[in-house]
Length: 135
Image 1: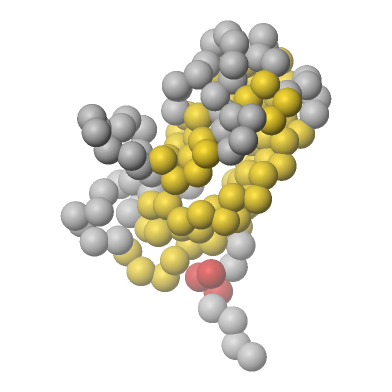
Image 2: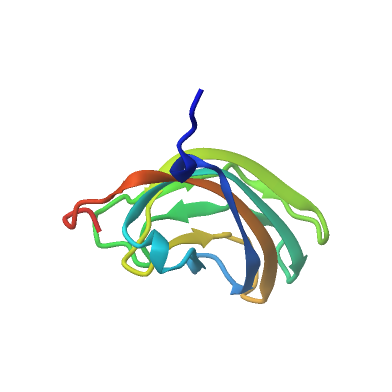
């Protein structure tokens, strides 16, 4: 059976620093992914330093939320965070990238603004560009 190479799972890794609750961090996939629909399959985060005792990661299409709009794509149950322990979450949610090919994660640590996370996110791209009215 033939497979569509545009839907192959991809992996993006990086570091989120200076994380505090309510601070969305950009996951930049690059211009080739601008205004694309993606399906985030899995998110893995490792708390490497900071004062947080637990974390509750969230996934967003945009960096700021307009008043009275709920654009949160994924909200996890609270997960205990221990330095050097990985949090692995099956997300399996759709979201859209912005004009720069980015989407956003808020790790939502319960304390401090000094938290640092290594992350790995698995995603698939959808084959078509999103309508301009979407984002």
